Length: 341
Image 1 (spheres, helix red, strand yellow):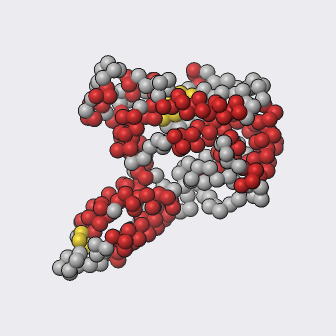
Image 2 (cartoon, rainbow, N blue to C red):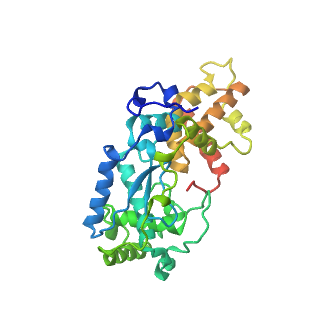
Image 3 (cartoon, helix red, strand yellow):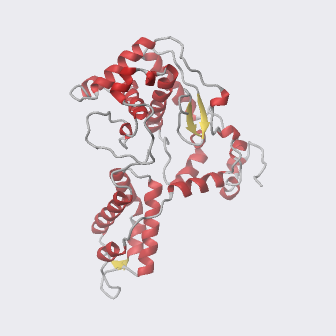
């Protein structure tokens, strides 16, 4: 049974007891947290561009804007420093954990909200530029890294995943102070989309939205989540902790071909764990996979290296290059030419 504790003392609990807390009992609020200042900054950017619309925000289980509902969901763990540290420890990264990244995501979700509030997705010109809003979402999507038909905002080419995401990313670039989008994209085909957003926003002004979010539209609110923190992370780990597909033992043997009786050798598992952070950073940068996935894969490879009793040269540079190349190939072959949405 979930622990019942006063809201004031959970930040001092040992981690094992904290994980037994129900999320709704944490009493998390945007008001008074670092999020409040960033949301106010978003509203100031909207005002600076002549927009009266202010999308409401609430604490959810992840970043989201409910389908066709103009409201922004922000992960609840961003409302508290200890929960951010817990997220980092368990999932290896905090999506929106820095001010810069949080503002990027807020602008992106604001793009969704304004699209839904004024129903731009129903307009013929919107469909001509961005595509069919009814297009099916996919767990994975193919993208062209160097395409100039899409803006570059989030680092995972997210604009290419769906027409709705394309609009949200285009809006985010348009809204970002100092983005210099007119100059940066002036020779790119995507400039047509940016000019469309610029014209569309100038026509909105202080006109009221066609759609307004209400309490019944708010899904997965942290204020109503009865699951414990421990259960929340167990579910996320099951979803994100995908298994390898295919065989990689031959690759490990080729990479770690030294014998244990040779001079200057060490266990391959030790090399993996010693260089884990640098390898994970490099692989996630070039493949776009979540850090959690790559960490899990490093753990599995290390365990397999132990089982196979593999050894390698302790040269750090050579090890990092080889391991990074192997993991990059594995990640790409597991999800060929795809990226998470």
